[in-house]
Length: 166
Image: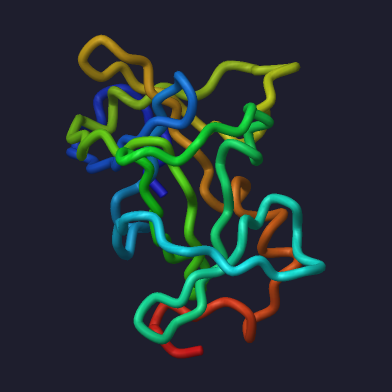
């Protein structure tokens, strides 16, 4: 993951920017397997309430986590800008549902600032840093922490691995 570094580290990092609610977020672009338009979700009884359901993406069953629920935001209808972002983490595939993909942000690593203490914020512990991009302050998510509640309930057989095998 692209974590905040000391000032003076000017290696370029590439982050995928997206919006959930009114806030912009970024994750390491190397974690993204692909971005797809929303598909029909199949609900799976007994899974985490954060899991909206699963999709079958070219023969691989992928659980889909709704970031609006994860961040305790009110539900919103899916629109033409809604995307399913398939990410790879710990050799497993999982999807996250975002309101809108923005673009790839390329910036020197030194522009990533550590997240200040965010006591009381719904995203507490999920944000490891932030960066200024154009006119927006984007929050760098710790994808492992964001997905942790869902991963705790899924074993290796219920989520496709990063090789595309079930």
